[in-house]
Amino acid sequence: MTMDPDAISAADRFEGCVLGLALGDAMGAPYEGGILERTLWRVIGRTRDGRRRWTDDTQMSVDIMESVIELGRIDSDDLSARFALSYHWSRGYGPATAKVLKRIRRGVHWSKASYSVFRDGSFGNGAAMRAPIIGLFDAMAPERINQSVAASAIVTHAHELAIQGAQLIAHAVAASVLGESSEEILSRMTELALDEQFRSRLAKVRQWREAGQQPSPREVAKALGNGIAATHSCVTAIFIALAFRDRLIANMLEFVVRVGGDTDTIGAMAGAIWGAGNGASKIPEELVTAIEQHQRLRELAIALYQRTISTPTL
Image 1: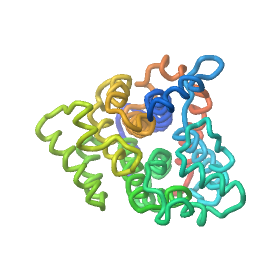
Image 2: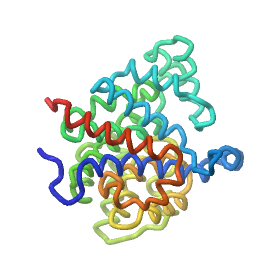
Image 3: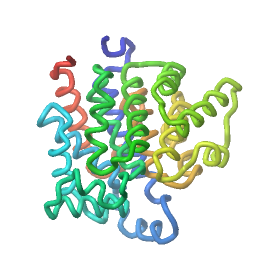
Image 4: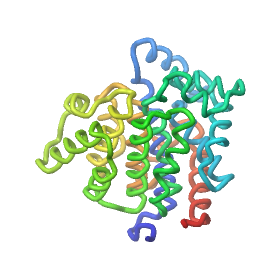
């Protein structure tokens, strides 16, 4: 298997994925949660120079990139240390994840901390929001994706549904990097989905596409979900990314906001898939420069690409 043969370079797709993730996160964050969360984000949602701040979605993705660039693999121990060190309340971490990371920081091993809040582990979308980075790194070795995603997810989101949702997002990104069509990606998702909660939602997406329907944001939220559970957000993000694949990313993110709910994470996942398919060159520069640390994100994306092509796929 080789990287996609069309005019969009693989490096551009890597950069597009990372920038799309951060952009979706930053643009969705002001609309996430209830009135208290939105009010707080109006206060802390901009840097001193007026750029849009991103949340834990991007921070944990940065942590994974830095780990992979250094080690050339997904390492649960290294990730747990980085996640815990990077934690700060102002990034909007979910309360369960915050508790886990605080315990890791205090010296509790991640294998215990991850199950300390929920007996079966969290089934939220916190593993899925950072899974695009694994989809990039393992795009040329898709047989590694499920194991790599699990190794990242289990540090904070050990529930099987959280892991399955994250695996779907990673595979969607990997397929997009390789230039697969929307129908090919949807077929891959259907083959990979194990739990009926994912399968039934993917069936609804296929039904809409085959009928040529363009559901409203309200219909999407009702049929697919817009919540923090992996089952109520991962397929939502995949559908939106594919539906807007040939349209402007700004239009897609406006749709995400109208879907409501967990807008920053749905925006991050959809933005990552869209960016992996279209490349950074399709993202308007004024949108990119409006988010914080955009140059650092570009540099990490290129370093991740270089690390990926130098890492054996066997």
